[in-house]
Image 1 (cartoon, rainbow, N blue to C red):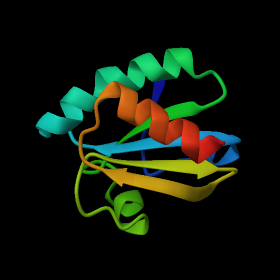
Image 2 (image 1 turned 90 degrees about the vertical axis):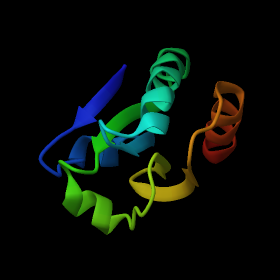
Image 3 (image 1 turned 180 degrees about the vertical axis):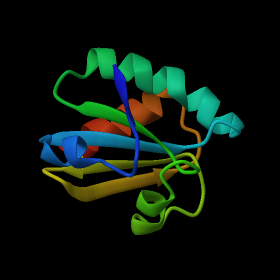
Length: 103
């Protein structure tokens, strides 16, 4: 399950060993294509916590992470960014990217 980050509060994500943060927006086409892929991966990759962050609602966090394009995915390891990718990726590529980031 992909959890929703609200009120610029990602304190829960920061406590996880591994977390994928999906920076997106409701009006973004590539973001809409990425969402079901992340939902599927969240069901299959139990060692990783998945979160969605709407950049229009959580603008402080988007600025803090320097997000300039969406979708952007950031992998956190124990609260620290260790990998980032921008743009739509098909499921095999996204899965591989996450697996490499948490290896």
